[in-house]
Image 1 (cartoon, one colour):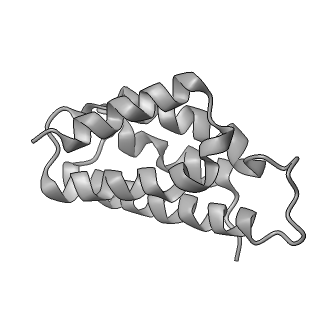
Image 2 (image 1 turned 180 degrees about the vertical axis):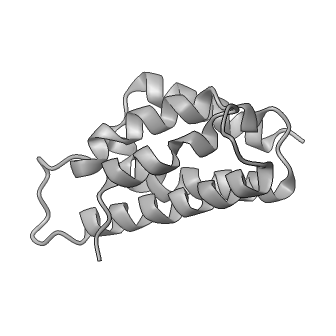
Image 3 (image 1 turned 90 degrees about the horizontal axis):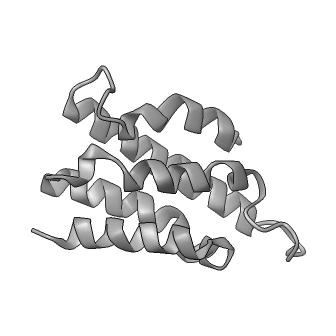
Amino acid sequence: AFLDPITYWQQLKDMLDGDAPVDLDQRIAGVRVLALCVEGSVEVLQSIQPPDPNLGMGRLSSVVPELISTLYSSDLLLSPTEELRAVLWKLLRSFLGPLRGDLTDVQVSQLLFVAVALSAK
């Protein structure tokens, strides 16, 4: 089954927001689900045969920019637990490798900030 990226992003983006009305464990679980959904969307995008170089990020093109900016400004980066750090890395890895050629310089800079924040202990 295919989940529309816009739909799951609308449902899960609040997990990256400090104003989310849930506790940290629920936020971590929500980010984990988001990472799995994005990973699935990327796999679907990569499975298109024959490959279409004009497709870019496909349906993810309306999600990834907002996901990056939301993650960049998320309070979750301030003092992540080891569990949260692992989940946020999973989220980054779900799209960064396959879609890196479609990212802007600003998005790459924001992702570098996120990576440095996650690497700091």
